[in-house]
Every structure is written in structure tokens, then in C-alpha cells.
Length: 404
Image (cartoon, rainbow, N blue to C red; front, side):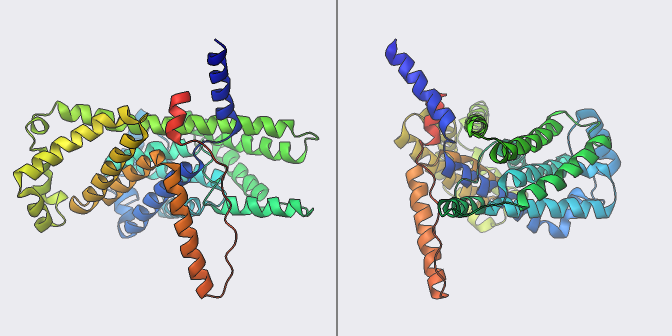
């Protein structure tokens, strides 16, 4: 009994005392923001046909659909071209700043607004990758994804060093940004813009805005550090819960995809992979597709291998070595899909989802390689390399699921 109580208390302490998986959180932040940004940049010439006034799915049709499903999209607030261009630019800018890790809490909210606004405006323009991005944009809001590999982490490290030297540290950008967005949120709310939307998005927006106010007051006005410690514990719990949800979502995606494939006759006879390779829509490289499908044995192995990996992956999370092997196989498969079938953004979204399971040791090495490469580049330019803040050691996300 004492051993069980000790295990429970250790698990509770692990979940409340730190935000687990800081490097994995940073990778999924970078992955999803880069995926959405690259998509928006590629579709700049076609943006109006996809989501704007020139879309075949007209503003009136979108309004009728949203009236029935209560989906959130800021593009329904006006049918003017200027408003559309503003929302599109805001979506691209927030993606870029989230990629850099600048004010990640605010940018993650704006990133979510951009994703939901554009995707819900024309729901028939997407694919499986859009669905994943749609969900993950909401989950990212609840994570502390800027602890490492971000401008926020660098700013926090500089502030810590300044305080250690006895210098006064002030942040004017954060409160100013909070005030501007607060005015916009009040205007949107009392202007009735949320009237037909589901309550989830308004609650998230108001909750994050008020939480930021409490965080600032606890840090500046409280005489003791207890309120800030309490808020930090709550933030850790929310982060770890969101990370667990992301992991669960990834497992559900692969499990349901694998079990549905098992029920298909073409997957059962080992020929399913052959057919998409010969569809014009999914054949950007016909010669490469013909080469891959020329061997019946290869088609059969890839077909059965895909099903086996997808069905087996959720059951391998508690065996680190087997999990890493299947994780590498799935990422390789998505990279092949990006090239052979011409679905780069679907593959990038799935690879970003898979990244939540990457081992921390590997991410440490990747970060070290990137830091050394950056140092060499700066040395050639005659500049010094600033110190890169390192996150505190924490268990891999796969260990979270065993204790949650």
C-alpha cells in the first residue's frame, strides 16, 4: 500500500511540478506552424478561389452551412475582399511568429483563429492533413510550447541573467499586446460576432486572455510568490493534459485508419497501394509511380506493412525500442507519400503529429547539431554565438501516458 501511495504521489509531483516534453512540444509547434505557413504561401495566387470572394463555395453557401453547424470563422463577419486579405495575412503572420516562438501564448491563439477561419470558410477544400491541423491548432493553445527553441526562451534566459545581476527587467510589449487584443475581443463579443458560433472558441479566447491577466498580476502585484507558483502548477497540469490529448489523438488516427483498412477487400488481398499510384490526381511523377507499382511483391509488402504499422503502433508506446522503429517507419512512409502521391502538406501534418513521440535524446542531439551549425555560420560572419537556453530534464512524452 505504501509503495502504491508513493507511486501515486510521484506521478502527481511529476505532472504538477514541470511541463513535460518541452522539446517535443517545441517540435510540434514548429511542425504545425511551418506546415500551415508553407501552405498559405503556396496558395497565395489561388487564395481567393480557395477561401475568398472568388471561391466556388460562395459566401452565402458558407453562411448557410455555418448556421447549421455553428463552426467558428472570422471570414463570416464580412464578405469584403479587404477583410479576407486581412485575415489571410494575419494567419500567415501568426504562423511565422509561432514558428519563431515569439509570444507563443498569444500567437498560438491567433494561429488557431487563422486555421479555423480559413478552413471553416470552405470545408470542402481540405483533406486528412487539414483535419489534423484543425484539431492540433486548438490543442497547441493549451501547451507551453515555447520553453525551448524559441525567442521566448531566449528572452526568458536574458531576463533571468539580468535579475541575477540585480537589474530591473520590464516587459512593455506583452501588456501592450494583451491590451490591444483585449479591446478587439470585447468589440467582437459585444458586437454579436460570436452569436452563431459554438461556445468553445469564445470560451478559449476569453479564458486565455483572463489567464494572462492573472499571470501578470501574480508576478507583479503579489507580495509572496505563492499565487505565481499556484498558476504555474495549473499551467503545467493543463500543458501535460494537452500533450496527453495530442498523443491520444495520434494513436486514434492510426488505430482507426488501420482497423478500417483491415475491413477493405483491396487491403486484404494486398493490392490497395497499387490504385492511388495510377490516379492522375495523385501522380505528380508517373514514371516513379510506375516503377514502384511494377513489382507485385513490393506492392503487397507496402500494403500489408502499412496496415501492420498503423494497427500496432498504439500498442508499442510502452516499449521504447519498438516504438522508435515503427515511428521511423511511419515518418518515412509519410515522406514517400509527400513525393510519390503529391501530398506534401498532409505528410508534413502527420510527421508533425508523430514528432510528439520522438525520444528526447534524439532531439537533444538535433538541437546540438543546429546550434553548432549556427555557430559556424555566425563565426564566418564575425559575430559571437549567444548562449542557447536548455530546458530542464524531463521524461519523454511516452512516459506521461504510463503515469497519467
